[in-house]
Image (cartoon, rainbow, N blue to C red; front, top):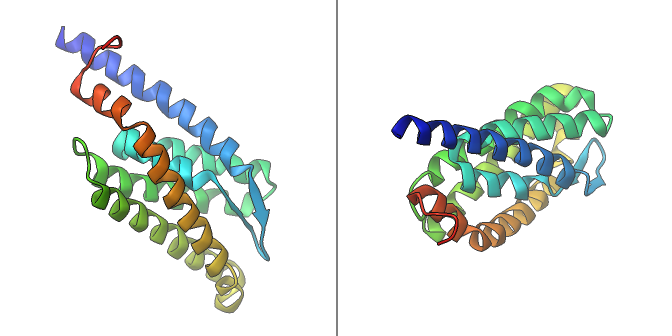
Length: 174
């Protein structure tokens, strides 16, 4: 019986990860161009899946973001997005992988994740374009991060009962 539950949990995480990657990709399509890239709503979905899946959220965040860069014709960003978005989801997911995380814990996880995003893209764009041009993305990336934190907080609050039920092994009907 325990092995059956483990297989069920694994299949659940894989399927939710696939849905998460698709939703990250879709949310990233809501974007505004900046001087050297674009800002988007994908991070809000990444934060939500960090809350729902814990560190496993690395995969939907990384894959969805890589595919979004491919679709947006930014192939030079694909590997960077895979790593940056994956690490931000991993870190937030590790912080949130406790039963019923407090609001303060969620804020900490989300702020740290978005700091990783802003710093990661600053480092990558500095390498690609030089430090001064990369600084032009700081404000748009910070605004994207703030928006993502708000979206992540709202969505995680809305889905907290579903997450808690799944973590405690609650039944579907009750």
